[in-house]
Length: 192
Image (cartoon, rainbow, N blue to C red; front, side, top):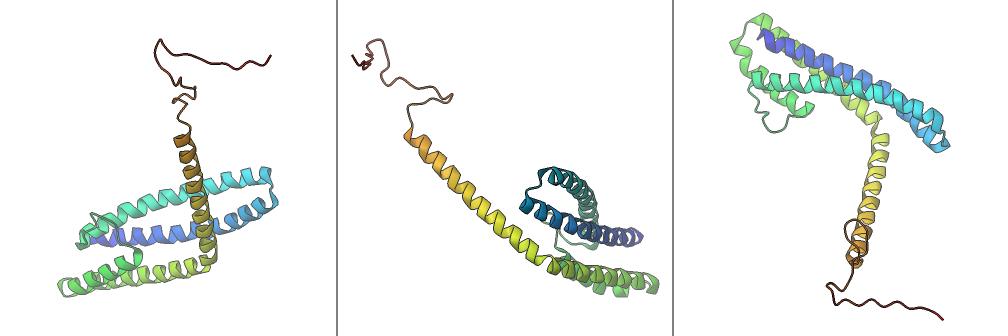
């Protein structure tokens, strides 16, 4: 049970750390959007470096969170072999686990489990509030990405149709001779 309680504390720390990083990233994304609108390439390049640093830190915390969540799921008997649960689904599963083991553990352990559940619930509510505040940006990004994907698929369709019509070229881009063999005749028009 001690291992589970330590993992739960580590999981909550990872979630809190991710929220801090996300709060740090939002102003950078706002500046990035502003620089794109102004087409300030020099400042944009510096900002991309700053953003990459933040994203790498976020990825490190996310990797740790996933490992911790997998281990917690194993310890509470949640089958996470396929896909790990969302935070909301995890809280439901953890709540069920706490309800099942309440009569099996001593009062101190029960209190610590309840404290972990309360702490994770609070972090979950903070996450939800943070993502609700970022919802307009997320919506804009989804729109931009879907339009980019649509334009990319249209470009691929055009390229595919062009290649199907141009059968006179080989893979290296050279023209192929239509007539093959020694009896092939070539005609050239010459103006006199």
